[in-house]
Structures are given as structure tokens and as C-alpha cells.
Image (cartoon, rainbow, N blue to C red; front, side):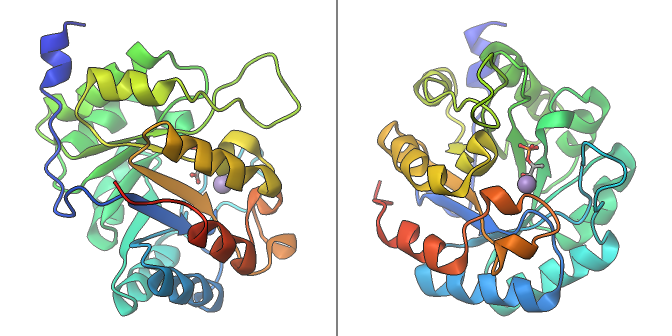
Length: 254
Ligand code: PEP
Ligand code: MN
């Protein structure tokens, strides 16, 4: 890859230089739980509500998401609270459906090198949040972004979410070096997801702070009103009080 190619990745986000602060449940479960999270986000001036409607679960027997019904709920609750919605799209066939309801299309770690999906969201008008594949080198991550940009969509947010290493004490290993590296090699916003990086709620606040100290342009945090009852990723989800504490104790100034 030449640096010329990488420098073509120029974002043009309507929200300018503000930090991109995204939070919400792993999966969309009900209107009531989304409402609780969205009300808090609005109060704390976090502008992006996340939630999966199509869930890429390791086991086919785990909760797979509410599908289109979930997209409708996320759209409705986000609008009500003046938030942008963020949700994952799993396959090229689903892109137009997800884009109908959702403001930012998320490409998950497991799909970060699904080239037909990358090309398809590249032809879409909606911004794309591209998560780093769990086994992906940074150069490969940038080339995945390049697939999207090359099809005409420059609105890409890169998300470091931890990679697989020999360490098994945490769900993944958060690669903080990715932040300065990616910022040196592109002008795209780089955000960090400490929830999937650690897999453990109590480790999320310190790594969120570390990410911002390293220059991250934003965060993606999993929040659930009742993590012990969450249908997915409860162990790594902050409850509302824990999330409020985190949001009030981080420096989100530029
Ligand atoms: C998610 O953000 O919902 C998710 C599944 O994350 P990842 O693709 O990083 O595993
Ligand atoms: Mn999750």
C-alpha cells in the first residue's frame, strides 16, 4: 500500500471535531431497556446510541438479535432522544435494509475482511464504523478501509477493539499503539471499544481513559440497564450508574 492511497481516506463528518461517543447495549432487546440507556446518553451529551439487531454470535444457539424489529426500535428511540443510531450489518444483502433505519453502519470484527460486504457499504451513502478484525494487522485494517473508500464512501470511522494474543486473562488484548499508528497513517477518526477488548466491565473505565490519553477520537462502550440479565455480553456491559461515573470522569475535550 502506498501512503498516497492511505491519504485518500479523508472523512467529512457532519459532527466535525467533537469526540465520537457511542454507547448502548450489545444487542437490542426491548424498547424499555433502549429508552433507559438513551435517556442517560442524552443527559450526558453522548450523541450515538448503539445496539445490534443482527448479532454475529460465536454459537448458533445464542441470541441472534431482533432483526428488522430491532432496527425499527433503535431508530425510533434514537430519534426521540436526538441521537445518531449505530448498528451492525452482517451481509451484503442486508446493507440496504440496515441503511434504511440506521445512521452509521457497523462492520464487525468477524467481517472486517469480508470484501464483498466492504464494497457494498462503500457504495452506500451512510458513514461506516469499521472494527478491526481480531487477527488483523494494522496495514490490513487500513486496506479494509481502503476497500470502502475506493467504492466512493470516505466516511469511515476506525475502531480498535482488541486483538487475539497469547493472553487469555482478558477477552482480547487492547492494542493502544494502534491509535497513534492509525492517526499517523490516515486522517480518519480512530475510536476505541474497551468493552470487547477486555470482556470485563470493571476493566472498561481504565482502558477508556487510556484510549483517550493516547489520542482516540472517541469511544464505544456497552451499557445495559441490568447487565446480569443481558442476552449478550453482560459481563462486559456497564450498568447505568457505572456508565454515568465513567462519562463524568473522562476528559472528552479535544
Ligand atoms: C459489537 O460491537 O457488537 C461486536 C460484535 O463487536 P466485535 O465485532 O468487535 O466483536
Ligand atoms: Mn457485544
